[in-house]
Image 1 (cartoon, rainbow, N blue to C red):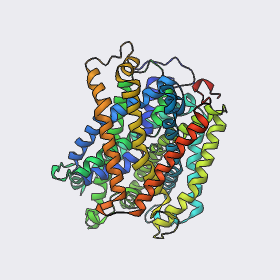
Image 2: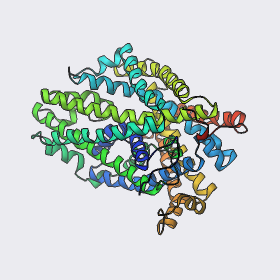
Image 3: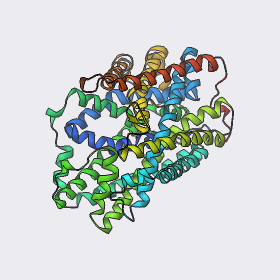
Length: 500
Ligand code: PFF
């Protein structure tokens, strides 16, 4: 099924590619966003919806992105140029978006490292204190980035693939261990499971459909260049359809398991302390760094060990995600300027680190209730998150589908994707229709409603939302201008130009 690839410089094996791509996909989105979105949106009912989104939008978009990279054996700019010389700007956006994400994801990565270390001495009530200690935040962000940088510097085969092969199974084992421990805690566990999973179809609204689509995109690392780049390091020998299916299955399993680790534990704690679970913070940053440490540490010493397992797993998930986006901008620099991998990735990491400093400080201020260092009413982290997640990523994903579905054309694309023993068969016409009509329409819906929600949150006009949208489109405009001014007619390199 997944044979060895003969190419040098790229992934050495199909399973190496699948694990690295799954490593990119499995990240904080699975561990802290999916569980609470599921709980809030009707439990298993949301899960069905989510699986439908993965099947109907995620799979096709991922195939497109991997395909775009693979057929070009080059960075996203060159890859889109290969489709059509006037489309290279899409590739530049696919390089810029992950760079912006690296700048804030590393701060969160720093938090996870700090909380992993802190598990032994106790993390209870330490979120705001830590967030406010600027030097510590900078230090841990740096530590996290250095770890990721070392892996990227070592190259695809020797760094990213090798580490993914070790870290992904480790993540899975840690997660299963935590789930088993939590399920045997006793009191409250059943309530937690009920809260998380009992299907409640009455809670499925238009908003939950949008939440499921958005979550599927983010969770599968689509629209951020990562799959194009990893795809570029694979050869014809890899069965794109099967690999995509495996990545999506792994990603979904981990997301579901994360909820099984979190909610029963939280409800157990609530039962013991006699507090109403609704009074605990059950989403996002607060769930991860405030509620969960309290929950684990209330169990005693075994709780501290489980807490360490949990945060070690979160660190792994964050590192294997960040290396995929660090790789995107590094690959472009390395190939465009024909510089060494170590230098290219170092430049990207230093840039990301410099930007992450104000981002980390701004987040700390906001967690401590100070409205300083904000952009349009948001701390810098939320600002960058909104620009990338809400506006630019769906645009990138949309353009990748349109490029394959309309510019390359489904016939040619499928013919290129098919190899010996890797035939689409009866799926051919379904894939073609989805690629051309259904998937782009659904992504456009995500984008349009995302923008409406940003500019008119709860139906009321928000000038801040409008400005964030303007900034995002301005960025897009800059990418287009830079491409046509400087890149369209110059050499932008390929994987063959890489020096170790
Ligand atoms: N799929 C990732 C997640 O679920 O967290 C999204 C992601 C974010 C990938 C940041 C890479 C990254 F650096």
